[in-house]
Length: 108
Image (cartoon, rainbow, N blue to C red; front, top):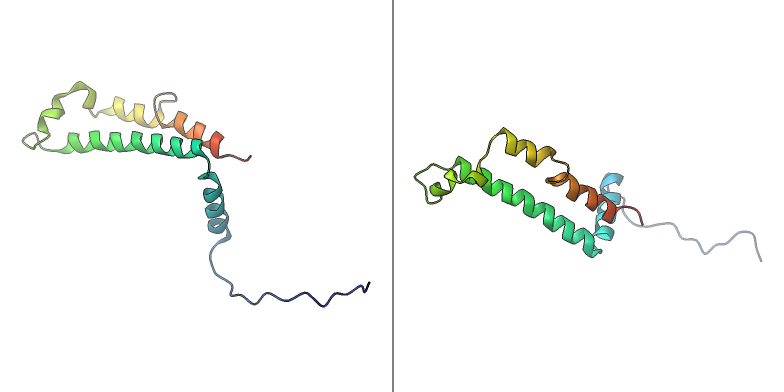
């Protein structure tokens, strides 16, 4: 058996100028999205954000608008306390969902 092998061919493709972090991140996202738990947690966290954006939209609408009657509901109030709950509450906000998402999408 010879020491050298002439069967190796050099790569003939073109080199892209994408950052390696984007290539690796995209590959990891494709792997993570194959798991049902990741999909469910992404859906739940996005629904939470969409619901809060709906509250923000209703709060900024004029009272004479078609959804103006909803501004008087105590559940839909937008103040400093509700914003703190949305951003920083460890169990009622996004932190728990993101923690579970990190567990589900982490290294296998």
